[in-house]
Length: 153
Image (cartoon, rainbow, N blue to C red; front, side, top):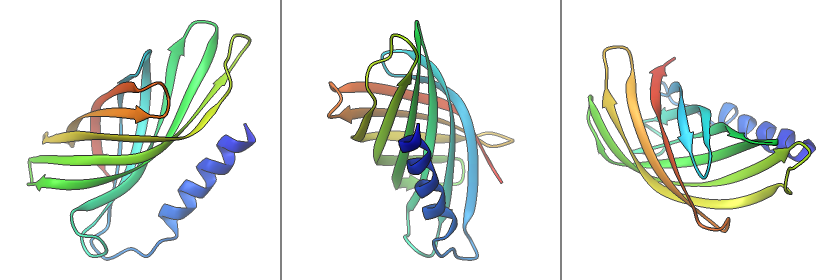
């Protein structure tokens, strides 16, 4: 648990205390995830137009519904936009993941998993719908899907 809190604290500090430009915009989202088990997820991202053009950074927290124990995944990701229009976007994903299992039947926690993938966003009247596919290298090659809605803060 101490490792999870340390990782989450460092991730949060990295995004709150890095320089921002006047055009920086935060988004918050949530949805369903699947990677060997079904779960729910929350994500937050900061778009910057000035510091690194066509990129955004942020993270995800996923909780998976597993029989006999709880599985939590914390991910820090960077997105590079190949297509970035007002109502549609396509981007590549690269990041690192920390997974922790809690409960009687829980396996050991796994950290430092590299994940790569792609995603897309589609404009809605109140936010953006998103869908992402990721492949987690170093953890038995798990393929994950994440879909939901993001709103601007």
